[in-house]
Image (cartoon, each protein chain N blue to C red):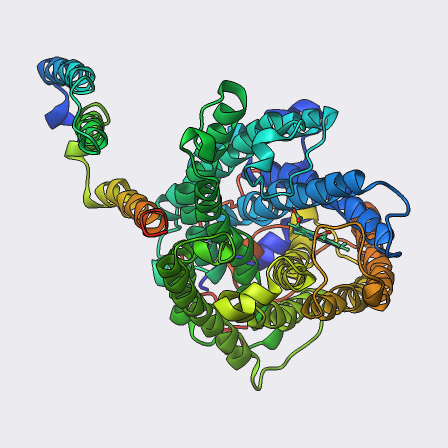
Length: 538
Length: 92
Ligand code: HEM
Ligand SMILES: [Cu+2]
């Protein structure tokens, strides 16, 4: 990228940059996208850790075939809280609203997002949402994160309150998506054409479109559910002319596309990290860019694959199964291009790269187990077994969360102005990698042997798998703790970060670490794509 | 921005009157039993009203192609959710 004055920037770095102002007001009322992004990151990470504690409790209970430590009903509450927190309060907002907020304007060479006030509003709507969700703990939810009727219409748990909370979270998600769409259209630095944008931006653009189009549907669905519970309207109650499967249609019309809200931003991060640590230009730039849009679009065509056993019409079953196989195509396009980028590169294994490669590996496992669930015949066997639990943890945790970790390690120097201890980061990575696979691969085995999900008790023949899985979860948790400790240590006493520690070419590395409030002293001019690695430029 | 052409006060009042009129029509039609067509008619009238609001009150009429694109694309997704759901519920 054509930029002068890198040396000058470097000399100026390592003040406190955007972090200079102190006091709670400087955060609560900030319009700075970087601070708003940071607030999202802190908040979502806290919910990730709480959700993780619930996960460990689930694993603890599953150590023995009988319900041992707490009751069946408590178990139901715990997996519901684990699932809903991980989905609504962590994985959906973490990368887009956290890292996206922080880095979209920096990637664009802009001073902020298009609507800074709306951005702040989205955070506070989010905060209102999680407060309402915490309020719903007076009668904790026990429906699973999917809220399926008819049970959700009847249970005494605080479904209405929780729905309202999720409604607010969804609204915040829409505001963020809208903001990003306008920002990417309108705020690109001079010279930054669409095809010179970093691939993270393409991914975030596709993500935002899904957020804006799909989220209103789930918002309205939860309002309908609330109307059914509070006013007794029979949208989903067959006795009143309603249809419980209709709820599933509406729910999955949102919730399938939203798995791409989770995964696309992580794919964007991987597309940034892989070329930097291979010192090679990204292979297939346009293919990766447009496959993001293709994924966003095709994600809307396949929601029925969650409902093969719900009594849908045979024609609908066949159509949804048929279409499901096509979503694999644009995803595979990305994977092949990443691998082609790695091919004959000068690869180094710094922590961001370790997590990015882990993403590719685990996501391939998660992705390739998808078609077994998308094919009707095998779905009937595997539906609602631990095979599904393993599949979606490989995609969501093995995929998205690893991509998120890659992003955190990659951008930590930029966000904080401090370097991380690389050695500790690699130890944490090793624990996470081993722990993850031990925890979740065993679930594939238990699942194919027929162990159903969402039960505190199981047949003794699944005992071995479950013991192994619980041991794995302890290793995984240890790895995550070490990683968090490393972040805190880095924040406190990390060595000062140069402006471009990884010799990367995207624009965020052309300004100080941490960046100033206005990001750039002068808006950069862009004359090239940002992937000229291994060429004389970098 | 190019809002000038739609901005006159008279147009706004005319649109407002049209919206009121259509509301009255909706109410009246609901008293006539058309079977399944009742829903169709109600949705049609509602769509016309929404279009009027978008075109005039929200100034879509004078907007550029990009904004039109963003306004029209979601209709496709609406059609999609209807189509997908009806393929199930009508053929079950
Ligand atoms: C520490 C790592 C984790 C462990 C040990 C873990 C463990 C589990 C287990 C055992 C279940 C199945 C409960 C049952 O069906 O009886 C479950 C469900 C679930 N997990 Fe995790 N999990 C972890 C991380 C995550 C992450 C990072 C996410 C998403 C970002 C996630 C999302 C979910 C969801 C959506 C469910 C389904 C809940 C439901 O059935 O309603 N988990 N998890
Ligand atoms: Cu799906």
